[in-house]
Image 1 (tube, rainbow, N blue to C red):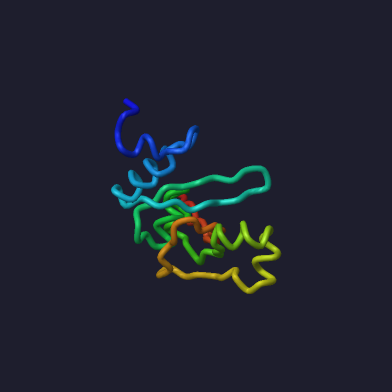
Image 2: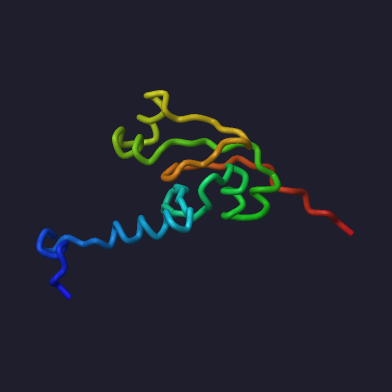
Length: 120
């Protein structure tokens, strides 16, 4: 290794891993959305073009079945503005219904009605 035309142009220590990962996810038509809790942030993988209820179903099937809406903000807005409160204040926080197509990097809060348990 280390003799190809791109090797000489690569800066020392620069990793190509982010490009490899992005290319792989793109080829698989995969995207990510995030959920945020008090003590954790999670990334979830979905197929490109998935709607909000299907994204909720990645977390738990009951969330897909009882889907009401998804409160959404983009990761880039959150990064740029610094907090959920600032995203809300800037009018960039939105409530989306069942037809909303989840965008790569969305930060989502799902509202759902858990199905009632049926007694025998």
